[in-house]
Amino acid sequence: MIWNETVECMSREEMRKLQSIRLKNVVERAYHNTPFYRAKMQEMGITPDDIASIDDITKLPFTVKQDLRGNYPFGLMAVPMSEVVRLHASSGTTGKPIVVGYTRKDLSIWSEVVARCLAACGVTRNDAVQVSYGYGLFTGGLGLHNGIENLGGTVIPMSSGNTQKQIQIMHDFGAKVLACTPSYALFLAEAIKDSGIPREEFQLKTGVFGAEPWTENMRKDIEEKLGIKAYDIYGLTEIIGPGVGSECEHQDGTHLWEDHFFPELIDPVTLQPVEPGQPGELVFTTITKEGMPMIRYRTRDLTTLNYEPCACGRTAVRMSKILGRSDDMLIIRGVNVFPSQVESVILEMEEFEPHYLLVVDRVNNTDTLEVQVELRAEFYTDEMSKMIALKKKIAHNLQSVLGISPAIKIVEPRSIERSQGKAKRVIDNRKLI
Image (cartoon, rainbow, N blue to C red):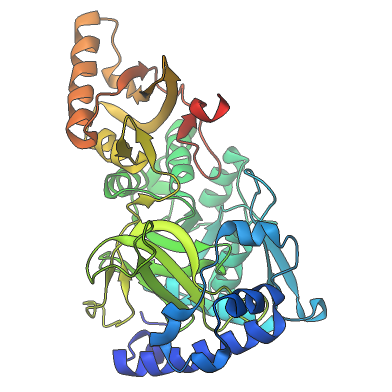
């Protein structure tokens, strides 16, 4: 189902015309209403008159997360606070939270793009959707909530946590769609298995998962354990929240709604555009946002973009699965390591659960990497020779992918802490020294 055929199937030429008009408008608004952007543009010697089309976007300054923290809480608003009808914020676990403000029109656009995502994932007005993203300042819960209502579906506003009640409500209310983080979906799958309620008694058919990176192997694991089709929904608090893009029924890349969020790919070192088809860091400009527009915001997400039309009929650009983050990349003894690489290896091995932890340290001035991985119950044994063989097997598989040999610690089933939100995959003790 296509929710908004006019823009989701627009020709590239028409899309670029629309993007050009909207870029000029948002630059004008940011320049005159946000002192931060006006100062940045004046530093570079440019004015809104220098932006004639979308091709001129490379003339504009980048925005980074520190700029949002430096202007905390409301320094980047482009409208008076009397026009801001809602505030959201990130968790702020690594400093001051990122605060975003929405006008009434921003909320309308947000619910529309989330409805597009849900429709692309096959959700209809006949479906009850259990929203198990956190409600509150986090954008996940309310973002999905409003999009479901816009689509005409039934919202079950569970929020995260209280797992036993999650399962009871999912069962009793006949939820057909689950929306949460992929790691929490796996947690719920385990809890359903333990609940004693046969899986066939649940009506779940679809999962809409996001807020953290996940691999194809993790998708297969979720689909198998929950008996559903699992789709990726993408978003960032700084841009709007969930709804920046999603997969369609073909699951061949995430369609980005580029009539609202213009994407670029840059080399994270040189900051220059990458060649078509090459991976790079994703940069977004919000070309319709009123409350707090973002100009060339560096997401730190590494991906590729595909501008070929999709088999579903949509022409909206498709983003590959996030390859990693330029700021999450671990450099271990000069080698670039992404948690997603470790996950892909673990999920290819039937002996292990998709729960792992990377512990990075520095011993005698040398970086060390330990991979803690959880064994499936049916493979757990006290036969030392079998455990040693298994350890060697995963060490060999990881070394061939990572290019370094991590230490392996096989741990008992269910001993790695489960997450009810975003999963914590890395402990880097080097930062504490």
